[in-house]
Length: 401
Image (tube, rainbow, N blue to C red):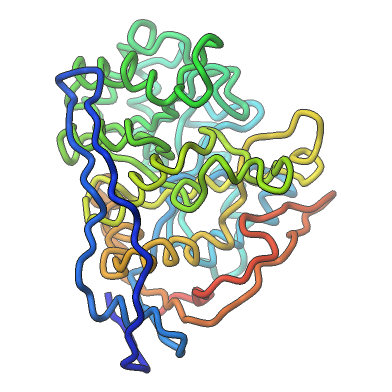
């Protein structure tokens, strides 16, 4: 990662409060969450100056992306293709992408919708159901198009009604085949039991489903998607590196659950898993900026029409694709860890998936820009994360060799 600094001024970065570690309920997965590491870093501190600077990193990938289809896909795809080389594309369409043949067809739709000259590569996934067969996993691996299988507990999030009801029972033969095929399992880590408090759904999922799954199939590669709690950090760090990892979104690094209610109900800050307490946000920031290889970029960018967010029963999902890189840079800069940004955005993901790292670069310039209020598509508008706010870091639109 290269820094182009035009001033020698050094200013102090704000620091996170030390975290209090606590034991996980399961002794076999007990680890300590350490306080944020405040490394003296002259280069990163210098970046906090108000003068113009540049940050050059290897072009990132997005390891958790919702593109939808139709007019919405046509509108949002260029935002991801502008800043990311590859993306793991979520399969929760209507109907869901449950077969390799459907994944290939969906990939073709994405490729046709790309802007001319774009080098963006969609990496497809299958939607796991109780009836997915081991043979489908073999077909998926041979296709060269499907790179992972997504576990949605039935009813956990948008378009998850066809998801899994019995992961350790009905799906076990499929998971065993995934081990043989070295096919990662991507997990939406929440239970859907109505008796479990919404803010505890991730913690209970780890205890009742994910920990037993890892114990039963220790060779299965698992990505716990969009983690939101200190419990998830504890669990990830108790697992073997290279077998269990996590994606992290910009919203779960920057926002806590107060953001849902400040100044009235804020539907555009509503996502699943829902935002958590400040102590959980701090734990995730500490983990992600520590330099650990077990965490990588996954925006979970999820576009919804403004009318579907601002209604009596609004959709879950935050649209972050246009602003994600700017926001990740903000997080790392605030804790003096800009030297760790490139590994999180560009190295840890492909290393976990066994894919080559990108060779092209992208430049982030300290050039304040205002996030548009909305982005238009065929029949409506989509409100982005940080709508109307001014962000400090502006990524270049074109890759640099």
